[in-house]
Image (tube, rainbow, N blue to C red; front, side, top):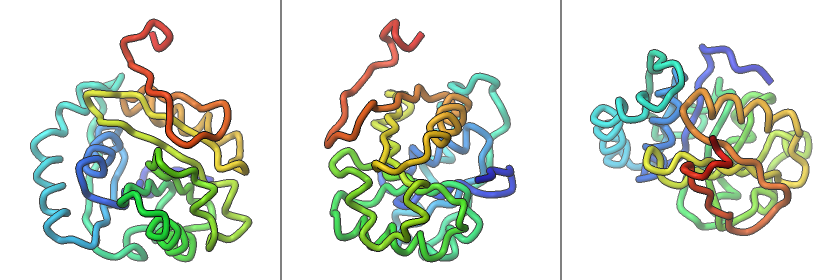
Length: 199
């Protein structure tokens, strides 16, 4: 898996959390593609990012130059050269399964696919994902950045261990506080960044 700066992070879903997740990666200097079937949701996400990006950039360790973003209504065009896709669609398992399948068909073979879900384990979204992709899948659960900076990472049961080190570094560079769950669970323990454990 490679993550050259020319390859985008893709956020699927431009709702309240999706637009914040996009802002996190933009603040870290990554180029971002935001996909939503609703043009209105994409417009609202653009307005949010343009108004609030500085709040996210202020959290990054190096105050780095922000990335750029593009909006899409179709998954194939959004993910064609992605190195990371973060799914933030509504919490409906059939929708997540079909979304993962479409990403798997259209994203590069080395692309990581992460679900923002805390309601479903990512292993339950793999019905139509090729077996060789499954080591590149995990949960990446954001709560409500920038107010809550913790991001919880969790295996799908087959996730390559090297992804956790990679994504921990990426998220820290974006001003987040990543935590890796020791085992799969439905729902997460919410940690607060003010605790000494995260100092």
